[in-house]
Image (cartoon, rainbow, N blue to C red; front, side, top):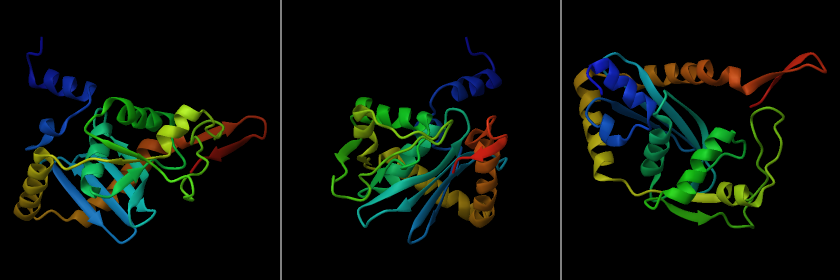
Length: 212
């Protein structure tokens, strides 16, 4: 039984956090440029970063995940927020994709009826080879896996998402939040959280190998 606020917070962080969990307690910052879009979810009271995700432009119709990092439980929510921010444009997985991220896209493909899935055209340059960004960086060859990766994902904005956007705009104005400062911190947050996982030691050649 959950009897304290601390226990409740730990419970929330142990499961996937939904947008209804954070609707009134967080602030969504969005930085849109012509070829890159960044999303940052923060706690405006203590300035903690809860999630960070970016995408780069592929074509006029769809974009590709670039970076993502989040506190425990917030990863799926950041993907949802990105999809809804881009709708009616689609998002596709990165061509360098970690197995953990692949697992999330597989759930979108199989379990998420609220997400539209369309295959990437086989003549597109983005219908290409995909590689793991961990261990030996091997190429994905399983057809079931490639079917998931070579897919465009779309999600219509929900009412909860619209409320979060509205609440965030009000909070940014009320608290005079400098988004630029937070996005600079977010890049450091990403590297501090994931840099160790993107490198391994090659014992044969006695050198550190970095996977980008």
